[in-house]
Each structure stands twice: as structure tokens, then as C-alpha cells.
Amino acid sequence: MRRRAFVGAGAAGLLAGPARAQADYPVRPVRLIVPNSPGSSVDTVGRALALHLGTTLNQSVFVENRAGASGLLGLDVGRAAPADGHTLMVASTSSMSVAPLLKKALPFDVMRDFDFVAQIAVLPNVVAANAGLGINNVRGLIAYAKAHPGRVNMASAGVGSISHLAGVALSTAAGFDSLHVPYTGGGPSVASVAAGQSHWTIAPAPAIMPMAKTGRIKPLGHSMARGASVLEGLPSIADEVPGFEFNAWIGIVAPKGLPPPVLTKVRSALDAALRLPALETSFAGNGAFVRFTTPTEFRAMLTADIELNRRAMKTAAIEPE
Image (cartoon, rainbow, N blue to C red):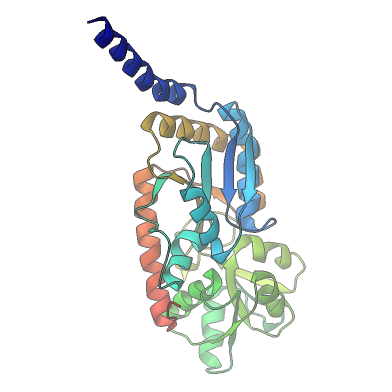
């Protein structure tokens, strides 16, 4: 009897260990994996989040950049970490929606192998034209392209990039053609429009708005829903192309199996951090706008976004490698 009591007490102690660890979470610094290079918009947003999330978690949060394979490398590294909340990952359109469609074989399934914590931001794409063309709005771009068939170039950050897929989606929805000119990144593609080498582009706001201030490119509209008032009063593309919405996004995911009490604590800390005016201002400075969702809403958004990009890839005749 004494032996059984001793064994029972020991077992109870073992079971209480993980429960105590979950209740005390976080018990050490939290690693936030950013699967992008330093200085990218995802990295900038991730670092701003880490600074304020550390305050609301009452624990240090440090950023670890694991760039490679369009974000797939960093997600794979994070996926293998213990599911205890001390490793989180910054997910984005590129890493979880576009990159998986460009690969025939992946080490993981984006819908199955992660726990969805929350979408935290939306980054509108902005369509812009060379200022010398005298195009002042989306309607003008459509009219110009239709008036010059076969002679209008659309710059992108590369084949399969967000700017490529968004451009294909826009030209298809608006019924005009453009010759796709891929560059090696968003910076060179936007610069080509400013220099007059390309006529127009559509890219995440952080890539467009600084160049627009030089007066060499003209922003025409943003890709958020009709009526959304963002980016210094810039109109929505959907005002001229009904139903068009093609945004980038950023969210937080975790290794599969995150205990519910830990998930609740992480979400509570995220919610508190995203309500801080300083963080909202930091996001806005990088063309990002706070959007805090439930895990279910995040998963549903990703499902729809993957399908949106799949259709654009089909239109652009892009095959996975």
C-alpha cells in the first residue's frame, strides 16, 4: 500500500511538472524566428513586435533571422522546436502562401504542421506608374494600357513574387495586357519604374511609398477593400476594379502541439502589444496595419490566400519546380 501511494504521488508530481511550466510560461527568453533577411519588411515588423511583445509577456523576446528558400527554411527550423511557446515564427504571404506553391516537394504542410496563433498585420500592395506618363489614377492606367496594346511593361520583384502575382491578378481583373519584366527584388523593380524603364508595378506599400516621395513614381491606389482609408488618403483599387483585393499579410505561428494555456497567454500578450500606440505607429511606418485575428480566422484567411495565389500562378503559367 505504501509503495502504491509513493508511486501514485510520484506520478502526480510528474504530471504536475508540465502543468506548472505552462502556468509559469514564459520561464525563459522567447525566440522569434523571422524567415527573412534583416531589413526586409517582414523583419522590420517582426523586430517592432518583439520589442513590445517582450514588455507584455514580461520576458525577453529575441529575433533570430533564418532566411532561405523564400521563408521555408526558417519555418522548418521553427517547426522542429519544442512546442512550449518559447519558439514562435513570423509567417508571411511569401513563406506560407506563395513559396509552397512554387515547390513540388516540401518538408512540411503549412496547413497541418503548425499551430496558428494570430494574423497580426496586413500590408496593402500599391499600384504605381512612372510619373512622366501623366497617369493619375487606376482608371488612367487601365486606359493607357488598353490604348497601347503590346507596348506596356509591368515590373515585378521576380517570377512568382507577390508583385508578379498581384500584377497578373490586376491586369486580368481589369482586362488589359502588360509585358511582365521580372527583376531581382522589389527595390530594383520599383527603381525601374522610377527610371522609366518600366511603365508600372504593384508592390507592398513599404517598397512604393518612399520612392513616391521623390516624385518619380505616382502611386495610384492600394489593394485593400473598397472604402478603406489608408496611406494618406490613397484610393482603393477596388473603386475602379470592383472586388479586387490582393494584400500581403504577417502572422504568428508556433510548432504544432502548443498547449492551450500557453496559446492563450501568447495571444493575450500579442493583443496587448498590438494595442500599444507605439507599435501601431511603427507598423504604419512600414506600410503595415494591425489586424489581430483568432487562430480560426487566420487559418481561413490563409486558405483563401493560397487559392488566390494559385489562380494567379495558373494565369501566369507558373509551374512549381
